[in-house]
Length: 206
Image 1 (cartoon, helix red, strand yellow):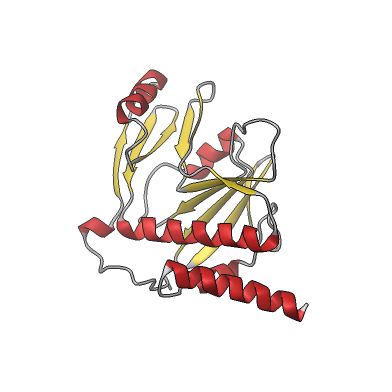
Image 2 (tube, helix red, strand yellow):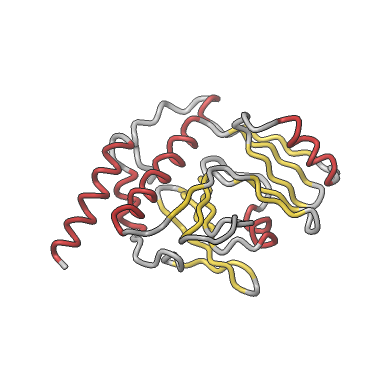
């Protein structure tokens, strides 16, 4: 069951809007990104000639922002170096791939700017669209997390593709059940407070 989180009633404005274009070459993809600029909320995915434009609904954005705040609060409580890159456009001209996650992160400190995130987060609110895992696989993103139907799912990159996992490899102590419970709080602030309280209680007991 999808947690309530004070979401507005379902309407057209609360459904992700997608447009998919076929036969778009790499130059066409790059041209669209340039025309769009940095301000648009539209997320763009490109897979070898297939271009998808997704305008996220308010529900989609509520879930992705809540999940981001929870992950960042978790990292603070655990003393983990975590840098967020938002909906960073990650792309490869050689492989004809491009994607913009709902949120993405790099774990740990780096001596140089990263070329790909360690963790990409996707909220699945309405079905359909390009296979994001195929795009992420081609780009070599180590972990992809999906928030779908009230649960957090982890996919870890192996040599032969992504493998579903009960836990993150990069953040193995992160409890997806705890995150799901906190996602069901009445507001984002209450969700973060609930997470911090649970982590501190667990620390006291240990």
